[in-house]
Every structure is written in structure tokens, then in C-alpha cells.
Image 1 (cartoon, rainbow, N blue to C red):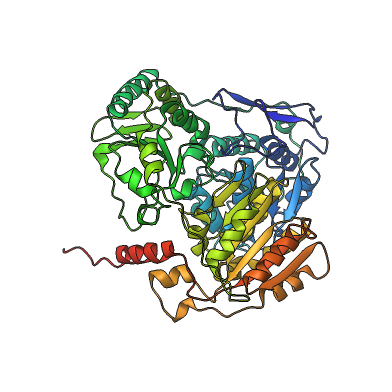
Image 2 (cartoon, rainbow, N blue to C red):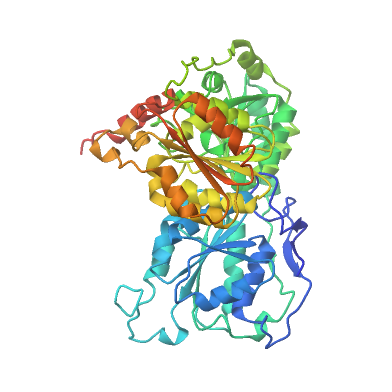
Length: 606
């Protein structure tokens, strides 16, 4: 069945960094299907309707864990042409995989069972909510006949109220649908899916376990009208905002522009680059926006992260007399413990639907994409800030040359990872010191990059790597994961092998939670050391393609990378890198001390 969303082919991965399988022109998007299943056919069931919708919006891979309440639904998902059901080892990783998939494909989906599965996946859904990712979380629910009775069911907390799970999801999803009758099932499901796409947030759909196999006339009307109302800027507000912003920036001597993580949800990455091209301003990104702005742009100056920015970037941004931030999130992590040297009166803050200019006016109902495009037409060329950067910039030194067979240092390892990057690769950085080391990687054109900064859940990267690699099989994913994080979610390396993925995982074994050590040390930050390659070999068990190795020095690392990119290029490659427990980036040392100071502030006087 050939399906399209607007003019975007739903069966291919998005090649840009904009999230959402929606047309870029903001027009109404309708899903079209070439075939209409007749009523009472096996294809006119609730289960097949959900399956078709997932395929139509681009979620052609669904991550699941079976349970007795969702088994019939899974049968119908499997039966749908074009839909691939991927069984995960646990619900948390299924949710993380849907998160990673949504980052690459624009939308992700997972299917779990009632309460025991739903509450397990809840943490991953909360992370997707914090990162503005449309994840469709489908739960197999109780038999429809059990609602409104005093029956107590298994997989519950032992009370006849079945709403506990849904109430838990209310604060981490933008829509909740409990489908326990066929009459309104079609409307609830389509409303949930369309809301996820419009809001770029997760949704929760509970499907009674006795309904997926039942045909209903509403599921046979194809193509069913399914449209997403376009969001439009208020024309007068847009014109006023552009006029004030243009005057503000054109009178500045050395303005700069900084991209933030909400460029993704606003689908404004292209407009941001268009403004950079037109204005000539120095161009930086916040750490959580790495990968959303092309680093090969001629005026790109690096990552702005306060005291731990890339070389010379903070000096240029914080000394500017005007700065435009597009889609920023200023939290304690991104502000390095609230220590950024920025002044409100110098800033234009552009959020997905709102613009604030200095200490002056705010303009609502103004879409970021429209604002940046119109503003770029009104700006005078000003390359002063970039020229200043170019003038003071000094290339960073190379790590000191080690002795033969000297224990491997982390900075040496990332020097070699940098050489691996190309337009055919993508980087996944786990919460921890990999945040800081990967932030310093220079991304070639087309190279993907993802990490979870707002939520910062350790272990996220294993599931996210699974989902991202499944969404873009033409890219080779390079995942940098700490040993502590890996211990949380290691099981789904099994699913990577089972799915035939060719990811390269660098397992950084330094004996504990290094990021926590630099914030507040204690014996709880030391973990039991595992034989990580032995564990992955046991998971591999001779089935599928997998290669593992341990490296302790630069010579072994070079050999391992050569093998992973050569003879084993079609395998999942797991490289355990053994480094000293105190070998961290200088940025983590600085950031950790500042975050520690912010965390340990005494209570305000009462």
C-alpha cells in the first residue's frame, strides 16, 4: 500500500534535522491511501487501522515487549505490509528506541502491556516529552467488559480502578486516549496521532485487549480524512516583530546568533541557516542543539556552553552587543550552574511561537520559521563578530604523543573517533563525560548527532542507538557509552544484533559514574566491573554478526578501528576501551564544580 503524508514519502528516513513527517510549507497535510479494505475484511479491524496509521506517518518500525493484554494487537501489527515489529528486551529500552527513532524519522512508536509495561516505559516517554519528540506509546489494556465493574485484574495494584496508568501518563504526554469501545475508537486514535505530530510530544493510547481483531465500518472508509491544521503566524504580529528585531540588530556593532534545541520542534533549521547566510553573523549552537546546525557553515564558531564552550566561542558570544537565540533552553546544565554571562537587554529570544526582544516587547503567535525568514530579508550584512573570532582563534593543540603501549587516554581516543566521522555516520553520546568529549567533535556535512541533555537519563543511549540505527540504516552509528550507563540498559545490544545493525559501540570503562564523581563524589559512584566484551559475546551466542575487542593503548585502538571499519564493517562492533578512572575532559571538571555549587546552595532565609 503506497502511502504519503503531504508531499513527503513516509517510507524513507528524513535527511534533514527537522522533526516530523510534515510538509515544510506549513500547508494542510492529508494522509492518502491507495486501497480501501471492504467492511468485515481482515483489514477493516481496529488493529489493522492502527498499523496502517503508523505506516502512513512514517513509523514503519515499532518497538515492543509482548504481554497478555497486547498479544492480539501485536498479531495485527505484524500482519500489516510495510510494518516491522521489533521485540525489545524490556519496556524502558523500547521507549528509548522509539525516542531514537523519532529523532531520525520524525515520529516513533512503542507497544507495551498494561501497567507493568506502561509504568516501565514511562521514564522513556518522559524523556521524549522533555526533548519534544512525537512518540506514540500504545498500551494493551483490559478487556472492555471489565471497565465499570468491581473486578480486580492482574498487572494492577489490586484495586478495580484501571485509570492509574493513564493518570501517570497525563503529565508526560500531550494527549491520552483510552479505547474501550469501537464506536469512537477511530476518532480517538486519529486524534491522538495527529496531536502527537502537531505538538511534537508523546501521546498515550490504551487499546482494550478484546478489540483489535474486530472489524468496524469506521475502519473501512479509506482514505479517511486525516488532516493537520497548519499553524500560521499572525501577520501583523510577525511584521511588527521583524521590524523591531531588524532595528535592534542593525544598530548593533558585533551581533551573533546562537541555535538552540527547539530549532527541531519549530522545523526552523533551514530558516536559521538562511538568516546566517543573509546576515553574515557569527553562528554558534547551544550544546543541546549540536547536530541541528551545519558545522561546515563558513561562519560557524562552535558550541556556546558558558565556561565550557569550545575554544573562543564564549568570548565572542558574551562580548557581543546583540545576540539572537533561536529556540534556547536555559536550564542548570546548559547554563553551567546558572553562570552564563548574558544580559537580557542584549538578547532576542525566539521560541517556536513567540519572540522576545531585549527588555522590550514580546510578540506572540509568531512562528520561529516565519520570523527568521522574514528577518533575514531586513538585516544588513555584518561580519564583525566572525572576523573577531577569526582574528583571535588559535587551533587547539593535539594530545601529547604517548609512549609505545602507554595506557590509552580519553582525548587520544576521541582524536581517532573524529577521523571516523563522515556524512555516512551518526554519533550518539550517552549522558556523562561523552557529552563533553563528543561536543568537541567537528561534524562533517550530513553527519548525525544526538544526545539527551534536558532529561539526562543514564542508559538512554543503548535504546536510542537501537532506534536511531533502525530508522537510518544507510548510516553507521557510532555510540559512545560509559560503563555505568551501559549497566542500566545493556540487554538491548541483543536486539541490535538480532536486527542486523552495524553500529560501532565504544564502551568507555573507567570504573564508575564519572559525571557524578565530578558533581559529588562518594562510594556509591564506584560500580562492579564487568567483563563487557564477555557479556556481549554471551548475548551474541553465535547468532548474527557481532565482533568484540578490548583496547588498552592507542596501538590497539587504531587496530580495532581499522577492523571495525574494514573486515567487520557489516557487523555490530563492540570496542571496550579501558581508561583510568580519573581520565576526564577538562570541561567536565569545570562544569561539575559549577553544577555542584548550584546544587549545594543553602536555603534562602525565611
